[in-house]
Figure (cartoon, rainbow, N blue to C red):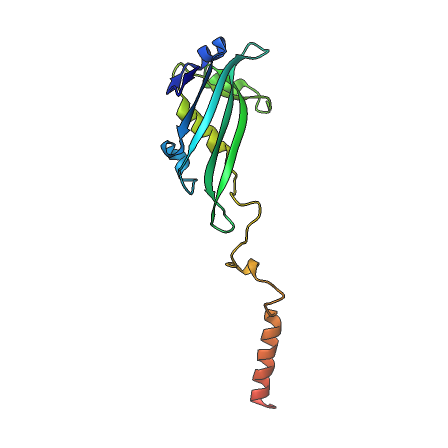
Length: 175
């Protein structure tokens, strides 16, 4: 097992059934940084090469780590845990990739390479793991929009308008 390779030969990894693992500092993943509240910590990965039942080269990838995201409800930071396992199938060309059925739920297909960048691959998979709308499971939301106003405390706008109208009519007297 080698630690933290910068590139791997995906097809050789699959043929040999070799395993590579390591960790990446979150701060080094610049594309991911724009989605984070802070870039502290590390992501751990383990990649195990395999040849599937159809004879296709591939790999199992296991990612773990904790990212700090910003809650879209209350704007406070929160920890988001990643524990993702994905199976990949490697193909030689984009044309081969386009020939595969899209609805294969058992594995994700990708174009393999003799010099696949591990950090970029891991960063892509982590970005795909992020929630569409990051938020706490439970949080106190600030009252900052009209939808957050408590109707029991706030008077009905039409009732207020009616009272203003009657007040104006009283002040004008009979016509």
